[in-house]
Image (tube, rainbow, N blue to C red):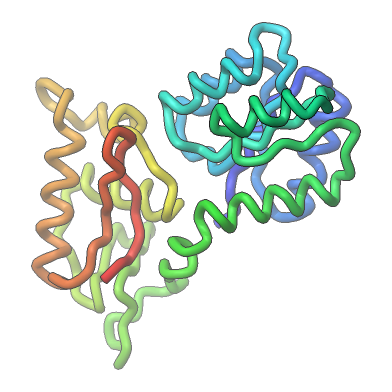
Length: 237
């Protein structure tokens, strides 16, 4: 699955050129013209990396980074016309993952995006394999297979009995292995199926998912907790 990049810049021409370059490199791109649009996109979840201009019309990019971190620990590359050393230092010290001053080469930008994504998600993605077909009869079944059409999950070829909400959560997490989702983000996917209070319903479903998968593969962790942030999917022993 293509990784999703959020490009936040109020310069229409630059933003669209960046989006086109990333799209040609097989990324899925979401565009935002200001901080408000960026936060709205991030709250929907599924963003793997943010390209963030420092000088936005409604806020400062350095300040916006703090808001982003409250939603998810998504990697951020600053793109900005400020080329002073102090600005670069501030951007990195405040939690930015890279800093690229304007004007920049689109080829360099794409290369930096690849590098940050590799550092952030590479190990998790490389350990996560989803075959295109369910192969329960295979002599060497995969640790994890999710078939959306059949609404079926197999752990080493053994079906897992899941509720609709559990299947939805597992699909969201596994679609972007290594991506950290907050409880609120995950709740958005299953809230319509919830009866009664929802403050801890995600934790309850995650606990149930872990128990069901552990019963089949006790030595493997599929869903990890990132304390203070949320949950992420990866296959670890």
